[in-house]
Image 1: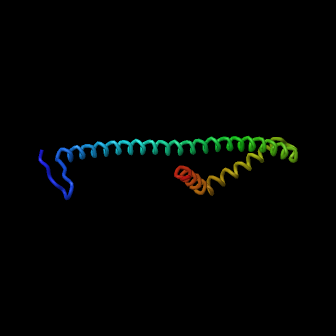
Image 2: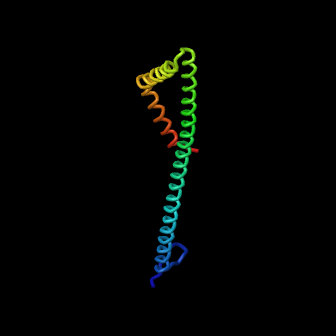
Image 3: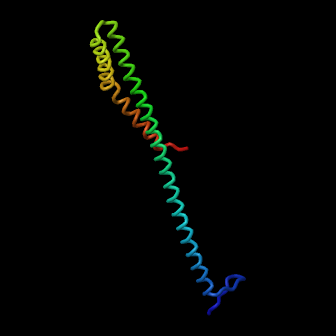
Length: 131
């Protein structure tokens, strides 16, 4: 084996090749660990976002259903009350239906873009929210 000197240290070429091989093996091992850790981190982040979206969706559905029941029973109560005032139950339910028709038309023509942008922004905020 041929020896060469580097300043005050004498090293053999074979030792240098072994060190390079160990360095490459160690680098490969660290790169594999880094990739595995990165994949795990991405999985955890995706799980966290999916959990947040699912919990928000479930909460929204529960609140929406509760609001729907309140609206239905409140509408029936209002219709019966208006029916007793007008003397006709049909007129009471007709007035409540007319009220909902007006609210529906206002929402379609005036608030459609505002509501649409609100929900789009809310979803984007929810998806990209950082803790």
